[in-house]
Amino acid sequence: MLSFPAAPEGRLRSVVLITDGLIGDDERVIAEVQKNLKPGNRLYSFGVGTATNRLLIDRIAELGRGTSQTVMPNEPAAPIVEKFFQHINNPVLTDIQLTWEGTGAAPEIYPLRAADLFANQPLVVFGRKDDRSDGVLKVTGTAVGGQRYEKRISVDFTNNGSISPSSLSGGISQLWGRSRIKELSNQMLTRETESGIKAVTETALDYRLLSKYTAFVAVSQDKRVEPNSGQTMQVPVEMPEGMTQPSSSAAGNTNAVPEPGEILGSLAAVLLLLSRFGWKRLRQR
Image (cartoon, rainbow, N blue to C red; front, side, top):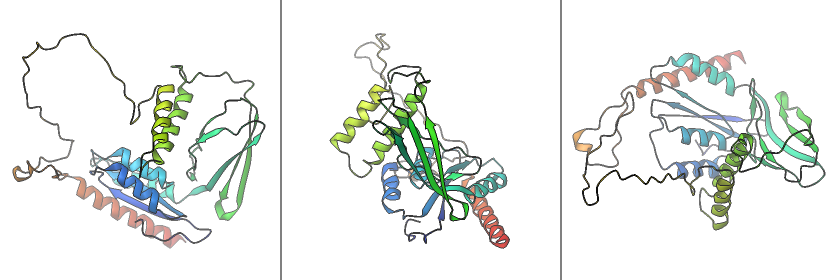
């Protein structure tokens, strides 16, 4: 998947990852995508099953400048796959760049690299500008047919009230904070740095957000048990819907993963549908 060479100039290569998402070591997988995905290649993720690792498939799609989709085993796959296929085959704007034209310092905008824009989809970015000086945000990119696209959007802070970072009502400011934490975390996928950890921690504290280095802690003064009278209990782990219990021989193996009961059939159906829609697309061309 990641060994594909860079796409020819003026073209995009779409790579679709179909997975049940039953894997861990998220950061290593995400780091491999960030390191090895070649320019001009776009990575889309398609998760199948009730226990899909949504964090993983969403993040690799974001880094791959694509989109993600999930289908449940009991859902009809055909309409979802067709919608997904039509979506990824109709990019409206690619290689999007955002630049600031105005006085004062440029705003801090996230994500740093915007994903491609598809039909019936908005372009969403989050920016912060401390000096609140007005200006113009220029959006450029490559439109259908290779034509250059350019649009200027006036940004007027005069008629907009300010929101404190620590304000609980600052929903937009918290979205900016989440985007900044995500970008900072992407920069530390292969190696954590002291400055990066500090930046993530300070952003999370300023905007009251959960992160890898911060947590919400509730302290209760109530005594639930008497001192020195602890009791050990075996608490069963609920299996996701459609999953089977591991065999007794694998019960002591921490690497054993229970086999999904219906996922294999759903994966096969998705693969067949993607092949059919792809063949139909080629015939139309």
